Image 1 (tube, rainbow over the protein chains, first blue to last red):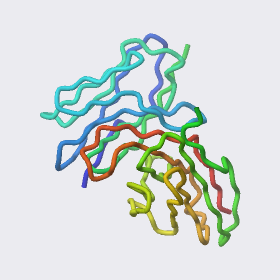
Image 2: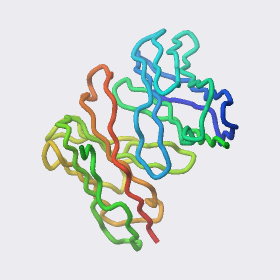
Image 3: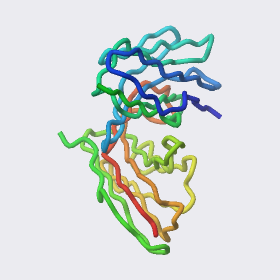
Image 4: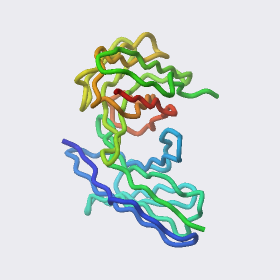
Length: 109
Length: 117
């Protein structure tokens, strides 16, 4: 079945560092791909999405490009802030939403 | 805007007790979902309702029942709680129907933390 594999954490960074979280997927169809973020004590919220190959999703300085040839949707941000500390989930949606295990990111001042 | 509202936020049960988690959304969404979140396992789908009047099993339905009471409300019931059901439960809603090509996003509640002793 459809599945998502994302980089294990936790990841600890200093402010202004570059962040990459790897995500690869397995799907039989042509899924939409998502990154969700969960801040401490809150539910998940959509960070960005891409619905077809070569689409780039972006939001709040984060970017991810839908790469069909490598079945990947890696999340990147060029300069992280303390407020980016959260758990990040990669997800795909063909007929239902499948989530990765989540990557905990901590940014230190 | 309330969005997706879950109650209760915290609950402690003894093994064998029953309880119902309530969820309501005010966005007129067709689809609603119940997930559980466990450390290192991400979110796993328990049940979903593609539209009012329908419910379907997700990845981990055993030990749970659901009711789509109307378009707004989707409840999750534990008939006889077990320690393995200790988890954080999230309700979500979306406009998409599960059988369509998915382009929509899910809107999540704040979660319900359940401990079964």
